[in-house]
Length: 191
Image (tube, rainbow, N blue to C red):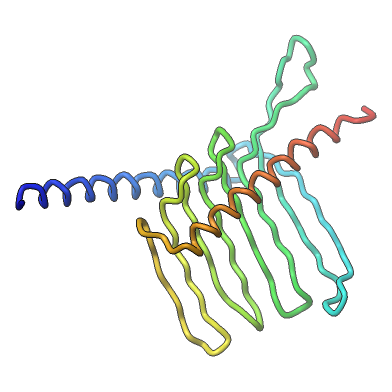
């Protein structure tokens, strides 16, 4: 029994170390994509919508990507794109600011999701780490309107709400990725 328990602890330690190595690589990718000298380009989209009871809501979306010639012999001007990161910023009147990020690996798989809210009604940050489309780590920091803090980190037994939120993040990332592909195609219409 003692040998089995030691073996189980060893397996858990190896899994945790592998998970932390994956998180470290995600953080390195994040730094690389945000490096201004790394060769990434950015498409910006700004939406201004007059919302009832809120006023003007501005949403700014930045698509950070690498572009390269898809087939220089066929068409030297035709590009292919690899999306690396999406940043979304929007406000709800003057009282709340939201910032969201989706980070992708070289194969355009979601590997990191970040959301931050600051303002009158709520203050929080969510960090969700993914590996091979599977949630591997969650970091939540929150302060409610009464000043109570809720901070937790999880790497194994995720709460149902975190699993559901992670699923929603993956679905939203796919929608943004599909939109980016359409946006880059539209760029070449009438050219």
